[in-house]
Image (cartoon, rainbow, N blue to C red; front, side):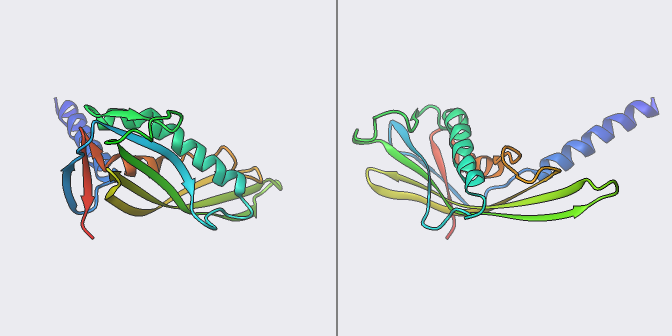
Length: 185
């Protein structure tokens, strides 16, 4: 009987710890998106945003973030309709337009040799992104965030190693059931 209660309490403590690690919204408030649909223009790069040494990793970040948002965004917007970057609905009036811009993509590396001569490499990715939502041409949301990710590998490039989930997850936290979270300035 004691084991049963101990296991239950251990499960509760693990659940609390995991919930505490989740991303949280910045202080702000919910506002209704006054449009029948949201058009996502895709992910773009700001001027001089790409790391000149790791351009392929930065391009991978753009593609992967866009794919994840196209796949997961509609669930957060419902009951509003969602149109992804491949649709030609941007010219329709009355749609909310969502943009995500990578303003900084920086990869840093630390390498050392371990016993046996095998290299051990850690890559550190810093992504700064800006999300914007406009309704009828008027800005409703402009929010900047900086995200971080680390991978450890024995290969000399981090290509296809990063998940890029943090900017996606933190962006999706700003949308729920036709509402957008407006962080306090």
